[in-house]
Structures are given as C-alpha cells and as structure tokens.
Length: 212
Image 1 (cartoon, one colour):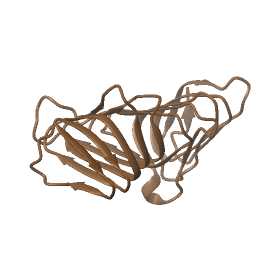
Image 2 (image 1 turned 30 degrees about the vertical axis):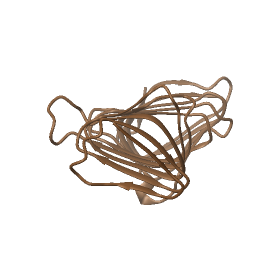
Image 3 (image 1 turned 120 degrees about the horizontal axis):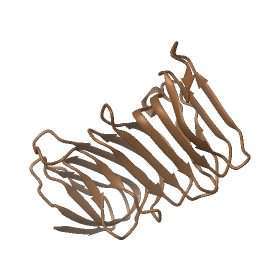
C-alpha cells in the first residue's frame, strides 16, 4: 500500500513499483506507475492524475477528484488480468478523461465530463456514466477520438455530444437527459437509445452505415 500527501506534485513512476493500493492527495499533479493491478482507495488531485498500470485499475468506496484523469491499463505480464479500468463511483468529480485499456473501461462521474481520447481492447466495452447537467462531451483533435467495439454512455441529467470525426464505434447504447450526438467512421449498430423526448443525431461515414 502507498499513501501520499503533498502540497506539490507526486511522481512515483518506477516501472517496478508494486503498490497494490493507493491513497493520493496532491495540491498539484500525481503520477503513479504500478507493475501489478492497482486499487485507488481515494484520490484528491488538484490538477492531473496519471495512472499507468500493468494490470487492472479499480477503485475503493471513496471518490476520485481530479481536473484531468489519464488512465492506462495493460495486461502484458499477468495472465490473471485483462488490463481493465473500473472507476465506477458515480461521485467521482473529473472534468477531462483520457482512457486506454486492453480490456473494458468504465468511468462514473458527477461533474460535466469531457472525453479526451478513449481506446479499449478489440471486442471490449467503454462505459461512461455521468450525473451532471453538463453531460458528456468530447475533445476535437485526432487524439481525442474514441475507439471501442461497444460504447455504453449514460448522461442522467444532460446531453451526450461525441462529435469527433475519428470515432470508431461498432455498437452504441445511449441513455440521456438531453440530446445525443455521435459522429462515427465505423459501421454502427444502435443497440438502444433512451432520450426521453430529446433528439438523437447520428452521422456515420462508413459504407456499412447505421443499423439497429
């Protein structure tokens, strides 16, 4: 276990670290590298929280608070992990998130959330859940695109706006308290969309088109 408290940045990025559990508090940014699966017991970071883990990234009962989250989970050294990210506490307060996982990735949030890039393993699922009125949005650069076989996005009180032209999503499920917009370059199947009277706008540039 590691507990870190700092009035500045925290940088623990040795590739051989084996923490297992981490509690983080920083008035600046915090970067944690772990050679085994890592459970975030709690994290309060004023700026950017960076997690680079060879294994799964999970979360305890306490929320994560960070302006920016950059989380990478791979599964190169352990046959018992999938390289998944599961940060599903709906009380998390994260403004910007970049996610990369060999397996599935799940992120819960209670503030307006911008996805600045997300990639999960082939056949896996990206799940986003947000309760803020600002909903879920996306950055516009090439690095901000989403690549996922399956996307499940819920904005309980707001819109979902995923308009990056580089998105590559095969199957999508939406639940929103506002309008939903998706731009996509892969053949797309809508599994389900629940919008409570709002508008669903889909643009797809693949010859496979849009199905249901």
